[in-house]
Length: 383
Picture 1: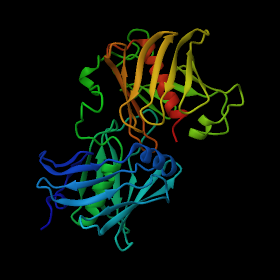
Picture 2 (picture 1 turned 135 degrees about the vertical axis):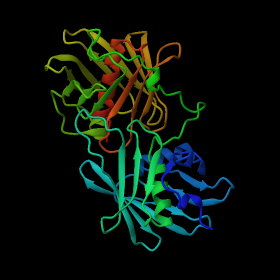
Picture 3 (picture 1 turned 120 degrees about the vertical axis):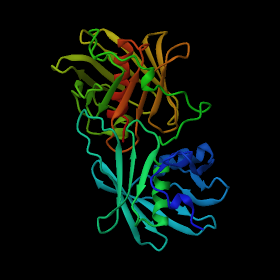
Picture 4 (picture 1 turned 90 degrees about the horizontal axis):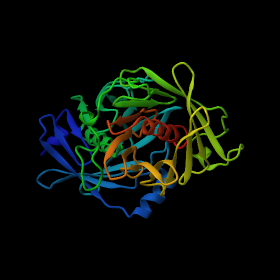
């Protein structure tokens, strides 16, 4: 008997369950726990989540089992198996360009079923309404399309009538593997995320500050408001020969610190950012053009669930930025006392924007320091 999951289109796939367009549950996602030390070792060596999950129908029938592989091109593939252990197919990652990856879906015999790629066109300063992956066969016919919101959330997957059951299961499992795909959330495991209705909407610059408003977007080297207007750009006066994590771990030739300038629309310097060398423990100093110190950001913790402390000075903590998922792109910003005043998120894929959601309890000083936090995450530590 054919399972409803493999005949329904569209479906909404999250990391906890799969639903049809009426919200009815077609299958649950049952994860197998992997010891933390094994996840970290595999993550460091293979860029792999090292996780397994099953798709289980509401009556308890196991549809398939998935084993996540590497996120690096040409490395360990992800595999999808039937309940009896026979292989349905596999998923490999390929590099399509310097800033874009693709996914090749294979059947059990090693025949290529389809190739998926990120097809949303993103311009500087723009935030698209949705991010789209398209899956096409060798003849260029689109067999499946997966959409999600830029800030994360479940994937809405539509299938062409020519898509086989095996291809449908491979696409669904791949979309579940991508980070930030929850339908809803578990309050016991992650802080509540700020939603737009929690923000105090103000016009950017209404009170004289450069970063007022309920939402800011940082993409590559530009910071924009919700209307797409560029509020600031980031410059790097001294460009080191290394980029990404290798640069963060290396010693800078000029005193072991890296410097960035955040400039306004007219080119005026708003503040400077200096970061010490190091990936897991470092200090960021943010200064005004006249040399006065705006604040500092100190990172503690290991590669997973890092904690960043934002301070105005010694013993004067303004906020704490905490990762809400291991190796993920979501951060909760809380002030002393525990109230959440901002949220920072990014879809963990190639060339995606950062989004900063701000409440009325987030003053201009903290907003500027949060911008500095995102600049460091994007330009220093991002692979």
